[in-house]
Amino acid sequence: MRALRLVLLIAGIAAIPGTALAQEDAPRGVEDYVCAFAGECPDEEAGEEAAPRPGGPRVSATRGFSLSTPSAPRPRRAGTAPANRTSRGPAPRRPAAAQGQRVNLRLNFESGSAKLTAAAEAEARVFGQSLMLPQLINMRFRIEGHTDSVGTRAGNLNLSQRRAQSVADLLVGMGIARERLDVEGYGPDRPLPGTRGTADENRRVEAARVS
Image 1 (tube, one colour):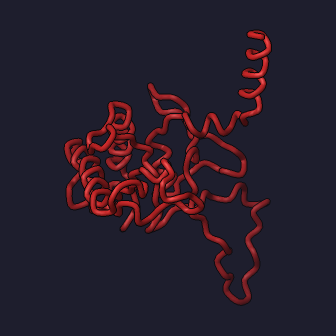
Image 2 (cartoon, helix red, strand yellow; image 1 turned 30 degrees about the horizontal axis):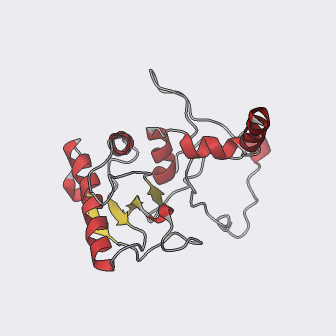
């Protein structure tokens, strides 16, 4: 019986797509945030990975993000011929992000508290390091707190504001100018699309580019 249970367990794990596991657990690097907010990404169609930084791991620049890309090409001027990409080599990378781009920072807090867990603090520091890079240093962001709908709306609004403020305070402590950061708590009012208000996924902190 024990052997049968073991076989069923292994079969169940094998049925989970490997990419889903990697997407869920893979750590992010500063390159990921540069890709999301500045649009400086490797060629997603070719599945290219970001070049490794000295002393750091090689990371995929699009992992965990949904990038906003133009839905249509820019119009050509009348009388001009379309560019011949074949003769001119690979097309340059296009900025994928713009004002309004947002990212779930994947931060966890102690239950009912605005105190970041150790793992969440490490994640937030990676984001903070990215804000010091030349590609992002002139951008402003809104740090948004969100909760599920369990409990009172007033309590959740307060908690989401405090959690967003905790993240902003950590970033300021790293040297990020406070005027680059807006802080807003939305409580349960903005659940993720397609989720129930009570779903755990709605307990999150997001960073949204505002300029």
